[in-house]
Amino acid sequence: MDKLHSDIFSFQLSLKNDMQYHTPVLLDEVIKNLAIKPDGVYADGTLGGGGHAEAILTACPTCRLIGIDRDGEAIEYAGNRLKPYADRFTAVRGNFKDIDAILDGLNVNRIDGALLDLGISSRQIDSAERGFAYSADAPLDMRMDKRQSLTARDVVNGYGEAELVRLLKEYGEEDFARGIARAIVRGRTIRPIETTGELARIVTEAVPKKFRFGGAPKKTFQAVRIEVNAELDGLQEALQCYIDRLKTGGRLAVISFHSLEDRAGKTVFKYNATDCVCDKSLPVCVCGHRAGVKQICGPVRATEREIADNPRSASAKLRVVEKL
Ligand SMILES: C[S@@+](CC[C@H](N)C(=O)[O-])C[C@H]1O[C@@H](n2cnc3c(N)ncnc32)[C@H](O)[C@@H]1O
Image 1 (cartoon, rainbow, N blue to C red):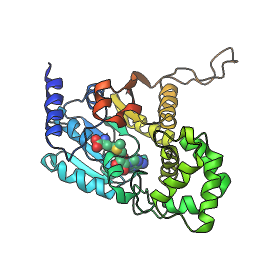
Image 2: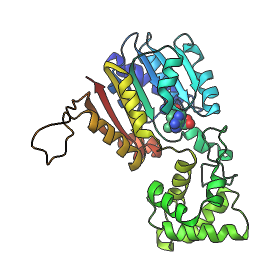
Image 3: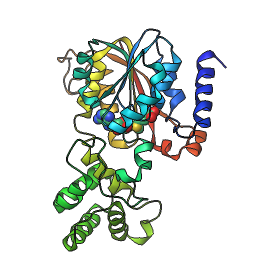
Image 4: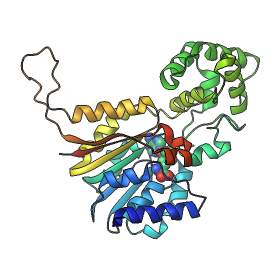
């Protein structure tokens, strides 16, 4: 076992011994493909519980890390966890899409690498009172950033039926979007839908019986969560900002958990890795576009062993590019 893999292995063991921490998804693959440089400056745009962040800081004892999260609880939790690295770790509460302003505010011009582990954290799902999980009954909230006013309750009770159909189809890829939207609108005319349990029951009853296995409300909850947190708005533009901020040889790693996030990464990475982006019908190149990155890997999936340990990793896909 080489030094890097032995460090990762002992880090994973320490995570297993400390059950308050969830093992980060695709940890080994992220650390290997970020190819962390001594004295390098890195950004983790989705700090969460700080698992990937700690592995980055451990993989190279001289690198510096800026950890961003819009969830105040994540910042507090990861901030405590990463106190031993305080001389080279900075936590920023903010939206990773504001990377330009965040780096400017820290007087950082270019970075050697960045990680975006998109979506919600296990801690957020497991905190029933945050309203992300359909397996627990709690107020319909789903805000990653509690400073924002829009909640899942507002979406579920305030959006018109057509709008609900659109987001269920687009963000949830839900086959029964029309029936579910109709049931939600019917349900809320009696009284507002206040809790995750009420929403889960309405959705389950709107799905034909033979399709109710494996969590019928899952896609609806995903769609509402994406809408509440505007997760896909400006994602492609944000990925472009991260690429623009990389030094030559710097790497950007993106982990996605559903096809819409993955499509955003794939599109931006492909565009940046392509020389000419002219319409195929043109006989000669008129765009002058030149590839600015090369694809390092992707999509990398979790191993069967990781999926058995952490079923959430089953849908994870890692893509990594390097700045030319
Ligand atoms: C999948 S978790 C990251 C887990 C983390 N890699 C770890 O090792 O614990 C995603 C985190 O990103 C945060 N997040 C999602 N979208 C964000 C955004 N646009 N800006 C900042 N943080 C965001 C969420 O609040 C959540 O804490």
